[in-house]
Image (cartoon, rainbow, N blue to C red; front, side, top):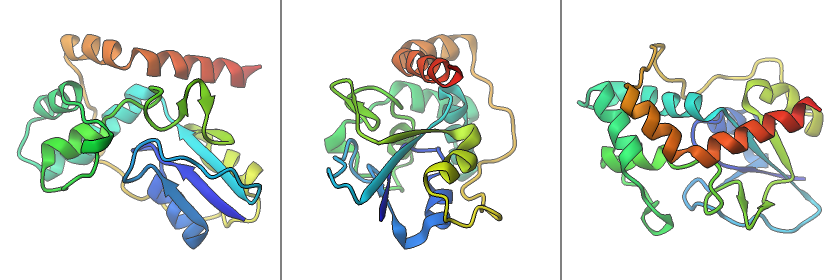
Length: 186
């Protein structure tokens, strides 16, 4: 069986890669909204993370590697957008790397769904990803899951204006996340 993770930045993608090795393909890593083949031998999932937590994780990842202040990195992530044609990243272009990593999580033209149809078979909660992955892929070694690409341990604080702008830019993401949580509680 082939495993496909419909990749969303900052949702344990490298950890799942280490966990499943050659058995996993990370779709969308270099091209947003990659189609998952319609094949019964493919198990596909997307890990969903609370939008603000994911956004802050992105800021933490870039903070030590550039000469920008925390507020400048937040501004780059909030106010720059790249489309599918611009998604290929030259990681030396730090502004593009930050902005691309901060792309909307759930907006229909990106990774998770298109035309209100989910691309992945399973949606996994980031906060319980090992437990939930074990339910759909029971034969993996879940005892010592590596934590890879973890950002600095520092509280990231958005200004009042940045928080309002975040909520406006990621409004659909926040709505989707709330729906995702409500459906799981039933």
